[in-house]
Amino acid sequence: MLKEYRLQIICVFLIILVFLLIDSNKPKTVSSSDYETSSEQLIEVDLENVIEEVEKKTANETEKEPEQDDKTANKNEEEPKRDNKTERTVYLTFDDGPSSASHEILDTLKQYNAKATFFMLEPAMRAYPDMVKRMIKEGHTVGLHGVTHDRDKFYQSEQAALNEMRTGQATLEQISGVRTHLIRSPFGSVPYLTDSFRTVLENDGFKLWDWNVDSSDWNLSADEYVQNVISQVEELVQAGGTPIILMHDRGETASHLSILLSYLQEHGYQTSVIDESAEPYNFNCYNRCYRIGK
Image (cartoon, rainbow, N blue to C red; front, top):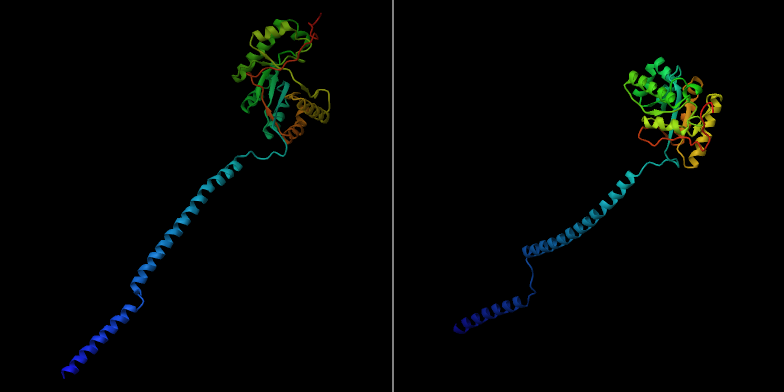
């Protein structure tokens, strides 16, 4: 019995020993919970890397976007294309008014959003005060052209010329409340407005303006005067000058004014008014001026 008992003990011991040996030789396995923990750690690492890469790419794209926005903004701020037309200034001037044609002239100017300067005769201002007021109200400039428009009377003496301009100045101010110093002498300053006349007028504060484009609308047909103006304007602009166009406040001029304004508008000209602060444009005598009666 004792031997059998010992044998059983030995067998049990051997069995235990075998199990221990077998267990020690088994490859280590990871439990499902450990595996899940390990996998989650790996996923977290990968996610962190992916997020970091995404953030880097997003940052790079964000840095590039302002440059694109700047380019777009600059493009939007560029001036509109003008199909090879540059804006140029032209001065429209009308002498001898106001008249019965002033209404039509002002309507046409308004239609084309054009501005002009009117050198007016004193009796005409008294005859058409409403036209004077309308000129001023609609943004045009008013100047003086004397009283008589008579060569022998206006140029009789320096004092005679000065008196006519002062009379026109007072009448304009009485009608409209506007006091102007802009003047244009009858028939232009050459050849009768000698240096002594110019000095007297200038000393009284008057600013004399002539012209460099003569429409000749007083002796040409309506069609001819428009073409005459256009050819002179183009020639002057090519030479680098600014057109100051002489026209007259009369019916035939008014009837074809829209043709001229259409041409100027289509060719990039911007009309402007003569300002008292601007340097006056005068004819130069070049020894051609002389006194009446001498």
